[in-house]
Length: 242
Image 1 (cartoon, helix red, strand yellow):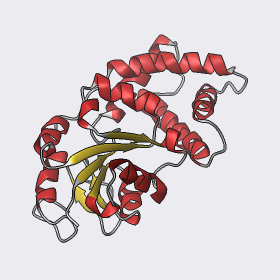
Image 2 (cartoon, rainbow, N blue to C red):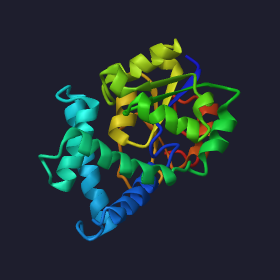
Image 3 (cartoon, helix red, strand yellow):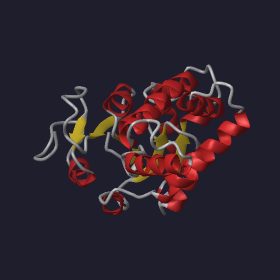
Image 4 (tube, helix red, strand yellow):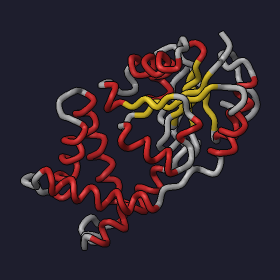
């Protein structure tokens, strides 16, 4: 089947989530008088990321709601298990305000989307929520580029589950064989998409993540994507595409 559409991950694929998260958390901790508590901004971010992954896994398994996993992240990060839900929400909202001031796209995002606009349909599949991703895409000037925005919180299932990818394909009205998925996570994005029957493209910007899953295409920047899609994406690879 010819490739008809590209499904995109957002965070750390089109949007520099790590950069914004690093700057936002550092500014937030300084405002809260907590900058010395965690050793360094890098150590604070590493802890925040570990807690995010741990509590997201609880949400993905259906054990807590989306809001509750966020509240529990804050409680664990502050080591305040008795923090009330509204207090945790307020702390998180103050963090988000700093995080949003640092929002930016990767330099290759808009040129790549422009290069692919005429030839392919576009959508988003994100392991987040519509409440998070829709305003973000609008603020970054991207929302109108995507026909569909599909998020795990509303689906009730998250990547790498095949159902998440298949539901996004259904939203486009296309079989998975006609859809490419582009994301930065080798297991959650690339392997998950491959196993669901999509053509999987792993964006490995740093190039130091090891071999990765078999049967996926690996690129070191989004600028490589138009050439990959211009070829038959299910067979082989061209120079610069691993």
